[in-house]
Length: 105
Length: 105
Image 1 (cartoon, each protein chain N blue to C red):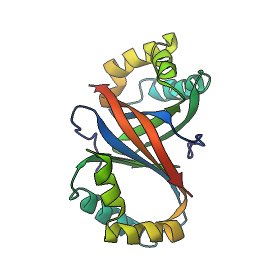
Image 2: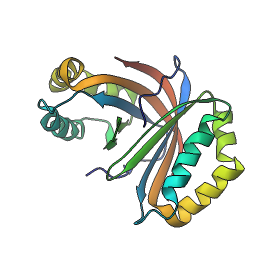
Image 3: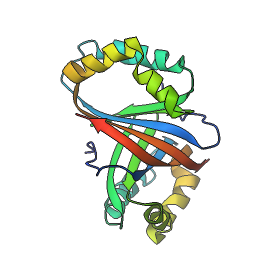
Image 4: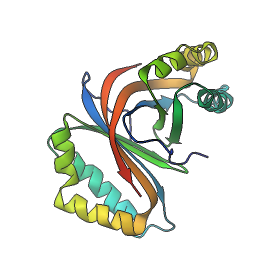
């Protein structure tokens, strides 16, 4: 279950990962669960939000760019990225952004 | 139907709107459709992606902060924001971020 991430006061960073899936699971669900678990263990991880309908959106929050770079270079994550490009995603976009302001209820 | 937004080369801005809904529609679906239509007409609008499961995530992309400010102050949007706070959302968070880098397939 994904809820609204309890992030600290800005500035911090958001990785917006948007994707469309190929047909069939092909190991995707298991990998997705594992990647959430693994990301949460990384230094600088602040939280994650995720939902999928026609398009899937996962936003992960990080304290700094170095932590994002390290997560991208994580060995197990690299394997998932490879299979993602090859099998799981029809298309995807990763946007790295700096959160400057936030508000809400 | 929401697909991956075809945004230009960074830098540009992303408004990450994350929410959990109250029970029942209460006019929400009609408003949501109208707000997508209206946002797309605004100066500086670059695209939008949206999905909802336990949490709803809508990311809208904008060329500059001034355009985001103007959209927030749009009269019809202000009415929707009021009803959102009062009736549609249990909780929400708006994060304004600057996209610095993107890649994908």
